Length: 509
Ligand code: NG6
Ligand code: CA
Image (tube, rainbow, N blue to C red; front, top):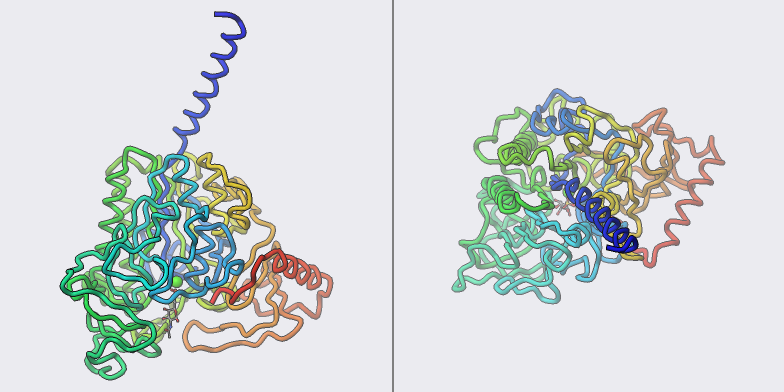
C-alpha cells in the first residue's frame, strides 16, 4: 500500500472510530412531560406536603434546575416550542387547541423528534398530544393523518387533545383504539350533535361536577368540552388512563431496548379532570389534585424501574418537566382549593398556569444521565425547553437545517450541568410576551393572570413591570420607575425579538 493510500485508510479508521464512539455515547432519551405540574408540586423542590419519591429519585441521581422554563403558560404553545424549537408566537393558531384542531406543526417542519430520528433514533410519543391532528374535517373513523408520524415520530399512542376535551378515545398509529365500525365516532365543537343529556342539563348525575365550561358531552360520568357521539367501546376510562399510557410507554422501551430510542412520555396527570385510579384516590390528603400527583409519581417510578430492569439506566438521559405552571380549579369541582392545606403548588413564585409571572413558566426540570451528570447536583442556569431541540441535536450529532428551530440554542452544557449561567435571555408566553434577561424580568403592559384559583387578573400598566428576581423571586417589587436604563434595555430587546417574528399571532393562550 502506498503511503498516500495508507494515510487515507488511517484517516478513515480514525473517522469511523470517532463516529462509533459518538454513537456509543448516544444515550436513549426519555422525556417525561407532565401537565400543569407546578414548581412546588415535586418534593425535591423543597416541599414536604406531598411526597414524590420517584420524581425525587431523578433529582437525587441527577441535576435539579431552579430556573428552567416551559415556553408558555399553557399547553399547546409550550408543546409547540418544545418540539419545533420555535416560540409559538411566531406561528398563528398555536393557542390552546380545540379537540378537533388540525395538526398545528406542518409535516415538513423539523422537530426534536425528526432530528433524533435523522440520526437513527427510534422515536415515540405516548400520552397527551394537544397539537392538533389531521387536516380539514377530521374523520375519526379512518386513519387520521397527518399526525406525529409526519413530524418525526415512528410511533404514537395518544390522548388526542386533553382529558377534558372530546374525542375521549386513544389514537394509536392514526387509528382510534377499539373502535367498532358499527358505532362510528362524530365530533363537533360547534353544533350540538349529542342529544343525550349534557353535563349542563344533568349536573347531579355526574361523578365530578364542572365548575366552568366542561358541560357538554358526558363520558364516563364526567362532562367535557365539545360534543361527541358513537365510539362507546373506544371511550376511555379516566381512572385507568395513567395505567394505560404507562403500559404503552414501557412497551415502547421494551421494543426498542436494543437501539437508541427517544420516548416522549406525555402524561395526563395532573390536568383536569383529575380522576385518579382507586389505588391513589384519597391517598394524599390534599384532594384529587394531590392524589393525581401521587399517581404521576407512580408512573415515573414504573418508567425508572423498567430502565433499571433492562439495564438501561446508565445509558439513558431522563428529563422530567411540565408544560405550564400549576392551577387549582381549572373547570371541575375537585376540591383542589378546599383541600390544599399548606401545600404551595407554585412554591414561592407568583402566579401559575395562564400567568406571565414566574409561576406560569418556571417549572420542575430534572435531568439524569449517570456518569455524565453529577448526582444530586443543582443548577441555577436559565434554561428554556425551547432549547431541547438544539441541545439534544448537539448531543446526538443531528444537524439542524438552516432556518429550522430558530429559537432553539445549543444549551447542552447547561443541560448537563457544565454551564451554570445558561441562556442570557428567554421569552415566556401568556397572552403577551414576558422577557427574562439575566436576573431581570420584564412584563409589558398586560392583564396578567394572578391566582392559582379564581380568575383574577392584575393590570400591569405602561411602561410595564420590571423585576429583579435575584432580590425577590416573587415579583412584588416593580422597579420600572426606579431603573429607567434597565427598563429601556428590556423594552428594546423585547421589541427586537417581536420584530424578528414573521407573524405575531394570538400569543400563547
Ligand atoms: C381551558 C379550559 C381548562 C384547560 C385549558 C387547557 C375551560 C373553562 N377551561 O380553556 O380546563 O383545559 O383550557 O389546558 O374550558 S392546557 O394545559 O391543555 O393548556
Ligand atoms: Ca398543561
